[in-house]
Image 1: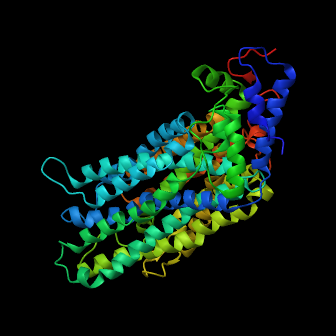
Image 2 (image 1 turned 45 degrees about the vertical axis):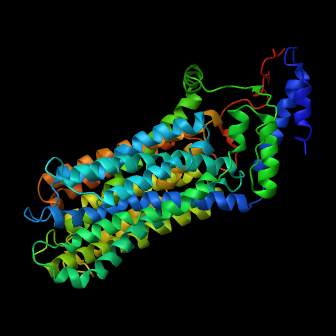
Image 3 (image 1 turned 180 degrees about the horizontal axis):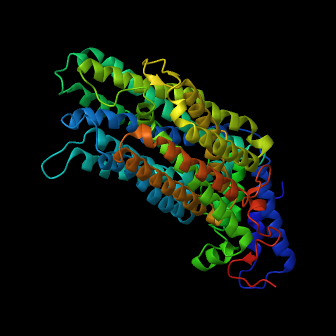
Length: 551
């Protein structure tokens, strides 16, 4: 292997002398050899460990984010029983958008920290934030100075910061450890845990509702005190997977690419590759002599210089806007599926008795389980099967195109669709056709842009900006999600949600169409090395040894 003997060669070089051209060529060859070891490695326990540890994080993220979808209905039963048992539009918006706003801050902050301090040093901190904020939500109370909604908004914002940090760190760690031919599947498997997290949130909600059935139906109406236990359990149980993952997050080794291209320590990176690929473990000798090399370094000037080139800037624009366009619809529906169920008349909006409260909660959980199993989860795993064969860009173009058509149909024929048949779980007037179209929309979001908008930013940028650029792209997505929540709140506040739903679906259609246009700016990353995608000349990437002047 070419990387053997690199340490002796570097230490032999006099850092006060001029470095010969052939020495620079050798250093670049050594760097290329190290990267080739990672890019051509067979699937191993290391890849499995990275995939599992990162996946648990996304499972937790999705659970904590989407559990509020059902919990908000329960909160209305407990704290708004004298006002139609529903949180008003401002309260619902605050609770749902708080975590999304926290995501924006977390994605930018942790994305930047991942490039400055290292993936390993930051990885796990975001889980500590999530655990603390989630537990605090479950134990929240209200008083004269602040309502329960105000307290929850604060804790959900903090939780959102932690969840946001998980996006760039998990994406970059899984991409930088993966070989080129399986990188798409590894990253998709990590992200697919989001579907299981969302499904589990609904499943836990149903279990809690059924477990409290006897107590709930015997509660004095309209007090319904046992619903207070239910939403706290639903939210608080989100701590468990995060606690399980925390230890393993702290044991993930630093990626060789960070060690080599940001810490500028090729010798340590060579040793790390040998150790990690052979044993799956990371060893660091604090007494080892460090000889840094001259390579492009992250700075404000270098950032502007790199992204001011259209070939690079258009990629960041494409990843950021594509994620924005997707999340307008993905979170517009995902965080309001209970309201959608009500709007298509699969459930009453408010209980008329304690028994009715149980029926409504059960029906909401039941329909959400169907939506999750029929659309969300299958979409992720179809992407997993084809992403390294078909490619990221074709999947994203196909997904946005199909979603545009589906939302146009749902918006234009909405009034007719929701009065055709009856909802199997409630017998209320609703449309099986609309539910099928809704499930197809969920399917093609995940077998489409929801997966690829996560994968592409983790591949398309140089190591020194990969985490930062992914964080920026993800943050733009959450800005789109916040806009969607504001739009949904205005819809509910404006009157009958059933009457205005078609306008929101029309907005989703426009958003999906613009996503097609932004996808055209993106490169195809399938099968390519991360360095090849970054649009930088790798043969002259190393310019010398720090402290020397290259010829």
